[in-house]
Amino acid sequence: MDTVKTVLKDIPKFAVVGHPNKGKSSIVSTLTRQDAVSISEVSGTTTQAQGFTCSVDGVPLYELVDTPGFQRPRQVLEWLQQHVNNASQRAEAVQAFLSEQQGKENSRYKDEVELLTPIMAGAGILYVVDGSLPYTPEFEAEMSILQWTGQPRMALINPIGGEVYVEQWQAALSQFFSIVRVFDPMTANEQKKSALLSAFAELHEPWRKNIEQALERLQDQQAKLDVQSAYLVAECLSSILSEKQHIKVPTQFVESTLKKQLSKQYQQALRTYENQCWQQLQSLYALTRLQTHAHQLEADFPDLFDQSSWYLFGLDRKKLVGLSTAAGAASGAIIDAGVGGASFMAGALTGGLVSGLASLAATMKTDGLKIKGVPVAGKQLSAGPVKDPAFAFVVLGRQLDFLDVISTKNHGDRVAVAVQERGMSHRLDRLSKKQQVQLTRLLHKASKGLSQSETGQLAELIGLLRHSVG
Ligand SMILES: Nc1nc2c(ncn2[C@@H]2O[C@H](COP(=O)(O)OP(=O)(O)O)[C@@H](O)[C@H]2O)c(=O)[nH]1
Ligand SMILES: [Mg+2]
Image 1 (cartoon, rainbow, N blue to C red):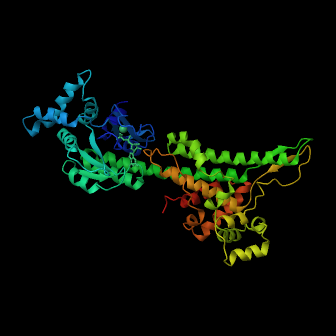
Image 2: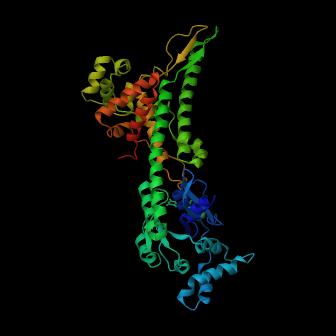
Image 3: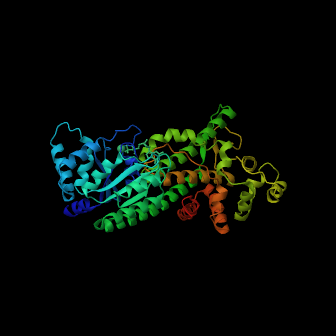
């Protein structure tokens, strides 16, 4: 028990302070990777200091304290100035201020007390300003108070609406803070987050070791997440591409209705696999709040069976034909595409290519979508799997686009997810020719289901196709 307590007590702690509505809570959320932090466009939402710990596998690494903003810094500074004779007493004056106010029922300086308490208890300071608004001397009072605490401190310029005044801020801030950095909690990537953590290590020597360990653990976790998420996507692809649905044919039936029902059932099953995969990715990356955006995401992201969107995710015809031929998967699917075998291949391979939607629609064979065969009473009618490589690449492209968004989303960025379609052709360039053919072969095989080792191979290739890689 004691050791755990010691570890918890010793982790570096930083109080995130500043004016209201400058992105303090967003920074806490992004850097602790926690969705539990309240972020609001309504200023004054945070009324109490609240600590959030960044942990990996239950091991606490560091803590950030979210605080209300300064409300009356000038009055507080005046009070402090009246209670010191010389600079050596400044920290004591801040402590005296806290002691006096803490006893009061309705202190006018409630917010200042909330934000100064963790600092005087030993926390470092992260002072947050908005780089899109000009610096004014008004801020000097709060910066002075922070300086008076004597605690290690760093300033973060959050370019909420742009970087127009960043230089001006830098000049002013560097007089009060040993380190000044620009940090955007919405868009910062892993590298920027790591760079900021490294700066924390510079701030106060006794924290260096913990921060370096934290950095290592976070990088390690990131690498594990990359592997796990690619495996999730590989499993999802395998499920979608091998899915079959059956329907019993009654003695009395209307053929078209029966087929429609089966087709609907089949499509729904595939959508469910996609949705489950997305949910799993969200929980893997601990983006629990995104769950509440699920409906919006579904509304924005084209439906899997919206054929007009397939060109966004799939491969162009030339690439598809080339790869399928090399993978030995071209056989029925592409040649039967309704364009006529030889001429289609010739057309595809001698240039004259139609890119995008038209080419994909021409290539796409919707066997699994239309139900083959005539229903016979007492027998089963079945749908799926879709064996067309074009469809496999569409499914893969969709999952990759989603994975890219989820795996790079900051916790402090609460804007609903918008999936950017990046297209498969560009991604495939990251693979060697041999790997591209291997991928095509695996996708083709997926209609019969993949073995565990094949799923592993697919996952490895998926890892290489991610946007965040390379
Ligand atoms: N566009 C943009 N909005 C931001 C950024 N940081 C914070 N916000 C938004 O500004 C508002 C206030 O953010 P919050 O973190 O709650 O600020 P706090 O009051 O200082 O804790 C929220 O609506 C945030 O989504 C940023 O870097 N860019
Ligand atoms: Mg806040």
